[in-house]
Amino acid sequence: MAIDTIFTAAESGRPGGLRAMLHRAWRAGRAWSVTRRTRHALVEMTDEQLRDIGVSRAEATREIRKSIYWD
Image (cartoon, rainbow, N blue to C red; front, top):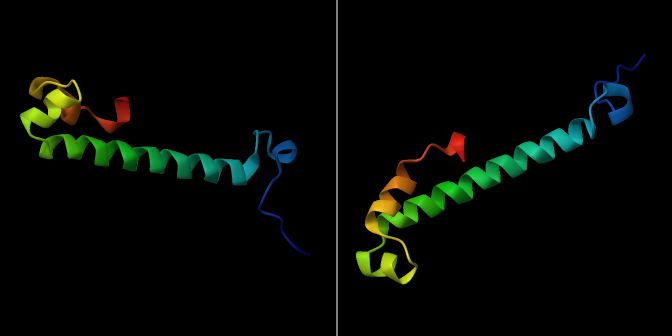
């Protein structure tokens, strides 16, 4: 007798089941990675480059110090 450990949405009571859950986790990880890279890029910018994109050094510093969990 085979044991089925992967449930469909109807069987599990959750929308989308395992595939949707894994997809959401992948998307969350990807978003975290993009946010992290973007914030670290701010560190390396000169004041002139920050002015070009309309961001002050204080705003960049504040953004860099933000927690990724509170975005």
